Length: 216
Picture 1 (cartoon, rainbow, N blue to C red):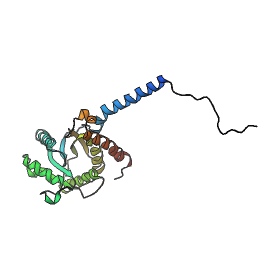
Picture 2: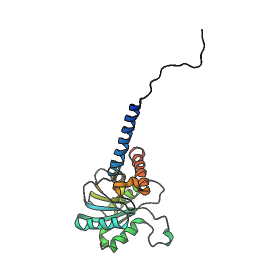
Picture 3: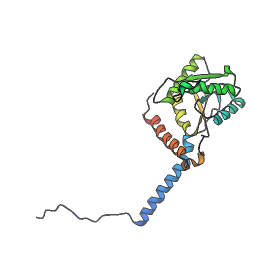
Picture 4: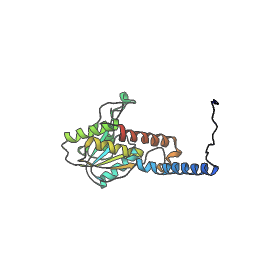
């Protein structure tokens, strides 16, 4: 009887053609990801009427577009949401993004009685959800009966924002979303810009967390 520590057996290995097919498949998956992921994260969906909700941190060009939409659309009021301003807040006039954006709206000609300011509590996580909670509280405080909301945001943040606002407000609200172009990179070529890569990949992870792991 022989004792052995190593056993030699015939093994199956991929051929060169097999490796080529695998490479083509991976390249196709990568191409599909690059061309479709931004559109998935930045949807545009109805209804585009009712209470317009602007995320307070959006840049000036996006806010200009939002105001143009507000003036030509079927909207009752415009709400500004967001959190406290953390950087330089002690030397600024405004302590939160919603307050700052409300001032920008007034500067752009929106009457003050049409503007709602909803400031979220300070927090290190789940800021978008807390902003939505602040909006829910403002809707109750202003006795607003409108159930159609149109969320305005920028870039790949839209799908996650809409999901979290829906969770905070409940199924009785119909939430549309418009994702305006982000500043700093071209949406169709986001993968060619460091800022675009950071935002898109970060939103992929954040959306997966909000969809699967987040508990209100």
